[in-house]
Length: 243
Image 1 (cartoon, rainbow, N blue to C red):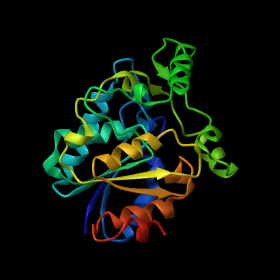
Image 2: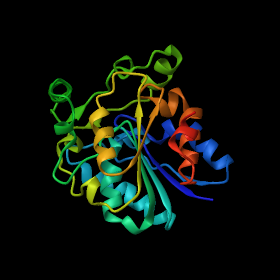
Image 3: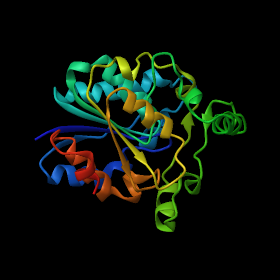
Image 4: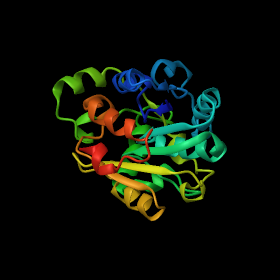
């Protein structure tokens, strides 16, 4: 059986993985889902100096505690984080999986990988928040979510996100990692991450699609869990696991 480390995106906490983690554990796998500093139940630790390196170290600690052979999974913003953690601990990673998120090269910041209008919105919303260093959650409708129950449940759990993590440059490039990778693009909304999926293909990663909105860990955990279970068996094809 394998070990998964699941890393949430901006504004979330490890709560967003609950149903996915339950399915993986029921299949006999070990699962760790760290909450990143300043988010979720650690929102009281949010501060201007919380940056990308802070979150990379959060995840590196979870990987170290897991031993070798980890399937390291990052959703959305945390594509930046898992790339950094894999760069620090490549010998611990069996496979890197990025779900509808960033796939940076060395020296790139998340803001530089977003469409200009989205990056500007992040900066502007942070400036209006007080202090200019934290980004309020985006409306879930902007992320393709149409299920009102998901919107009502998730919105109340979201917390502000430190802007610095979007400004800090990655210390590692995904193309340099020497780690097998899978990229999963969510096609049920107008994802800005399609260029990242195309980039993954140029790195020789397996690239697949999920017919889901951006909030797939909570809006369709069964679909996502089925796809992640395939990552414990490299012999499964993207098409078989995505069906």
